[in-house]
Image 1: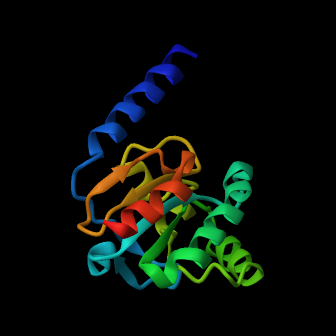
Image 2: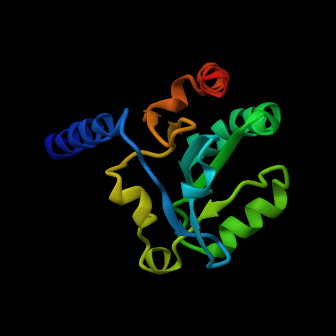
Image 3: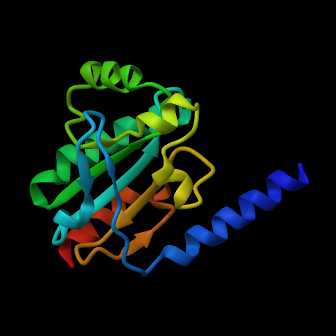
Length: 159
């Protein structure tokens, strides 16, 4: 248990250090095309690190869908970073949740090895779901956005 606690503390510390610094998230989409948040300057970006097998992630999706529905036209973009172990799981899930029209990063190589998306692990994230909020200038404003993204999004859009 000590090792787990140490890992969690290091992860939280690493994530906190990302706040108020620029961050571009780039990777492969479910269809294998490259994607980067670089093109979303001027938008507020909610990044949702999730997986279809993660119950708490699924429990948060209605909140994310609602925020997207309410604020997409005002300048919110959402990026999903899927940590699933098969593209089929993601594709099937998205077919059943058609209002999730935002891009989903998915890494087939990592998935084949039963590993999380390298974007997720590369950022030091060890718990799902984790949500980031990035402001219009591309600066990470929160690495714990899961707690309060509903109130943060309108403020960031207004900036």
